[in-house]
Image (cartoon, rainbow, N blue to C red):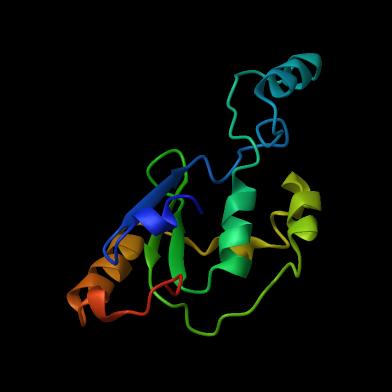
Length: 143
C-alpha cells in the first residue's frame, strides 16, 4: 500500500513467495518454520511466510488492481498492475478472516490467487498496456 502513491499508471509490481510449498513454508516466522520442519524431519528449508495473505488482501480490497499468480518457472510470484478488475467481488469479508486463514485453506481460496502460467500473465499485461493509454485510467486514490 505504501508504494501506491509513488506509482504511476504503468507501474507493475512483482511479489515473490506468494505460494508456500507446504505448511512449514507458510509459517510467518522463518526460525519457527525451520524448527518445526526439523522436528517433523522434513528435508530442506524452503520458506515463504504468509505472503499469500497479501494476495488475498489485494483480491478483496483493491478492485483497481489486477493481478495474476504465476505458477510455472520455479518459485511462484504474483504480477500486479493497475487495471480495474471485471466482476469484482469480495471473498473474505474482513481483514480478520484473511489473517485467520492458513495453508490448509488455500484450496478453498484458490480463485483469489488468480493462478495462471507466465505466458498468459504476460499476454494479459501486454494486452492491457497495448490498449488505450493507462494514463487515462482513474487513479486509485482520489486527490
